[in-house]
Length: 267
Image (cartoon, rainbow, N blue to C red):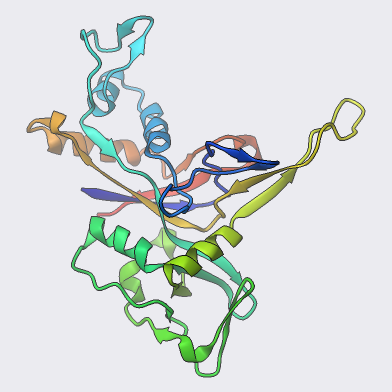
């Protein structure tokens, strides 16, 4: 199994299944309520970037067009590559005391470690890499006292040491429930209205949620049983496909600069 990292360059709206009042929500995990990128969204975007129909069918499976399969076979087939959901690893939160602090939780780090190094020891909650005596940390409306903080000396093991993520310098681990609350408070929100031909408001306001820029996410991928001894070739072709473009765009509102992501895979 392999990992592809995603660094958000602009707000990302992944499209929720429900709408509460005038709030257009985003996709969330049912058991944690954390925002995420559905694997179908990632798969569809990556698949569309492959122009060779033969390679596309081999990696992602054939498709039905006008009652016929794209590769001429009798049935729909599964591809040689599987792609997992995109999960949050570190999310930026504004801080009155430290500018911007990237937060995560034991749950999020444990999930990431299972795909990368299951033997890693997950640090305790309230660990940070900028602990100073008598220096409290303000995150949104939360106040964390200096006496509660712990030193996070090996933080670089949990942050990809690559040029794409070099801006992540101040990190903190919070308890799962507090991290979920701050992530909810730290989501990017935009107020939208609709104007008629007379430039007057038609209808009411609506709010659109999005995962904020500078969030670090990732998704796992690997080969399926369909590879049948050709997994090395499938992995090579998929990596070449990812290397075609360092920046991809997911979701709508591309003309407004939404959904641009810098991607790279772990060597």
